[in-house]
Length: 139
Picture 1 (cartoon, rainbow, N blue to C red):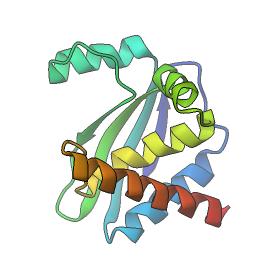
Picture 2 (cartoon, rainbow, N blue to C red):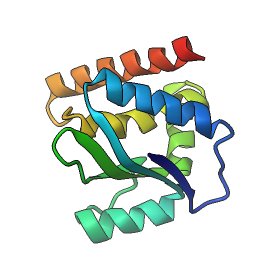
Picture 3 (cartoon, rainbow, N blue to C red):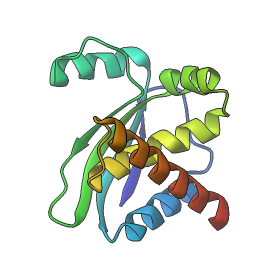
Picture 4 (tube, one colour):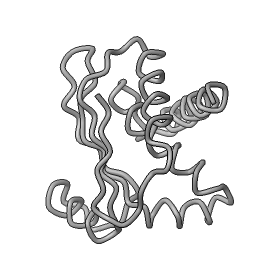
């Protein structure tokens, strides 16, 4: 089950479409959907989590906590709406596109993809693009 929670005034206007897409992404990676919580927040909220839980005193767009059990995806995905907006401007893409990229990025981590090494970053970006295309095909 995919849940959307809001710690800021932002609200998704297409929760059902996003949830269906995320479900199809999980299936496409031969995983099973468990309990996935997206928490939309602001920079301060996510910064506090970054400092308290990860020891990083920096701003970030997403932090995901992985509670996967075997092949079943479980996790909490915290998303700073402010960071996503700024990144969309920096990357010259729409907010909607950048938001979907961040949402699927967290799921891809749960599926075993990493982005620490350069070759892993390339694979992650290719997977993000592949999964973003799935949303557009489904709609």
